Length: 145
View 1 (cartoon, rainbow, N blue to C red):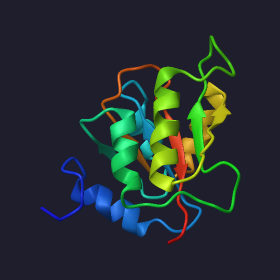
View 2 (cartoon, helix red, strand yellow; view 1 turned 90 degrees about the horizontal axis):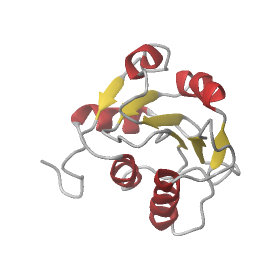
View 3 (cartoon, rainbow, N blue to C red; view 1 turned 90 degrees about the vertical axis):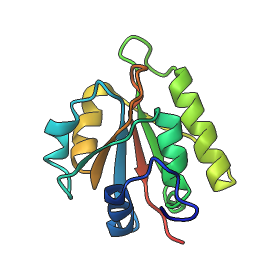
View 4 (spheres, helix red, strand yellow; view 1 turned 45 degrees about the vertical axis):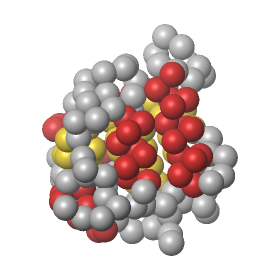
C-alpha cells in the first residue's frame, strides 16, 4: 500500500503512468470495448483492468498524472453513433472530474466511433474500467509537472 494512491490503482497502472512521457495518450475504455485486441497495438501492449466506473478511474489516474496544457484537447471521448455531438451523462461526469483535478475548465473533443479505435491503438496503454454505460471511452493526453 502506498500513501495517496487510490486503492484500486494497481502496480501495473503505476508503471504505465510513470513510463508515459509528455504528450503520450492513455485510453480509458468501458467494459464493452474490445480492449484485448486494441491493447495489442498500443505502445506498451498492455491491457489493464480496473473494477471501477470510468469517472472513478479517471479521477484516480489524474491524482497522479497531469493533463496536457499545450494542446486544446487533452481529453477526447467516443461520441454516440445515434446522438452525434451530444454529451452523454458519462461524458459530462468525466469532464467534471478532469476540470476539478486540473483546477481549470477542460472540454472534451468528440471522436466518431470508428475514428476512436485508431487513436486508442496509438495510445500508450488501454485501461479497461468496469463502466457499463455505452460510449464510456476516453483518451487522456499526459502533460508535464
